[in-house]
Length: 296
Image 1 (spheres, one colour):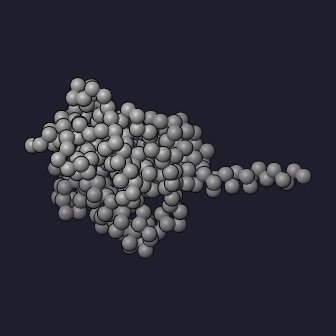
Image 2 (cartoon, one colour; image 1 turned 90 degrees about the vertical axis):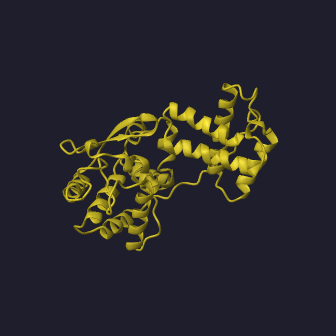
Image 3 (cartoon, helix red, strand yellow; image 1 turned 180 degrees about the vertical axis):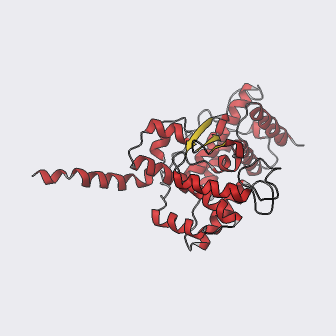
């Protein structure tokens, strides 16, 4: 194992001890591996400020979005802070590197008609049809689970008496998402076909793969992509459904504080970021309701 592999392994061990999410650890690993490949043969703990700046510039020129470049910056800043804490280096090369600006590109909200088409493509009584309908409906509820949260649900997380599900989110945060009557019906129908699945009594995961075992995050993405093809729609990502749910919450007059509790956000900026793509649409509707010029 070379020096960089040792550094990365130690850093990952540190984050596992802090119970950092697997997705975040994977992101750190990817950025550090890419940095090592950018300066082949060099020890990443010995790189200079100029090396890091060149890496970030190259990342932007390679077609990465500004948000992706910013994420790489944050990952490296956290890593080099750890290096200082562990006394591997005396000073972080990130100290005088300016934070990259992020161009705010709103995530498009999925129109109601497209969601209706998506659900229509899942119509049927078979296992995958019942499962996919229930998952898509839950993604559209206020508090819409992240992909990792969705596939991490277990049967025990469901409370069908109160029509709610307990979600285990980032940083071991736990929240409860209530769901409506149609989502409850869809989940109930899925549970009945799930009970006949060969792994029903062996695998605790709520969402099972048709061929066996728990549905993975990759499987969830593939499911939605397949249903979009069936519905003859442009590809819709699960994250778009989460944005759409946040937009619907704001559009209905839901508060930012309640949104933070439902969606599992710790920053007050998140309710504003989610659903921002439809902010103009909401503003126009509000303006029409007010109709200030009608006073004259």
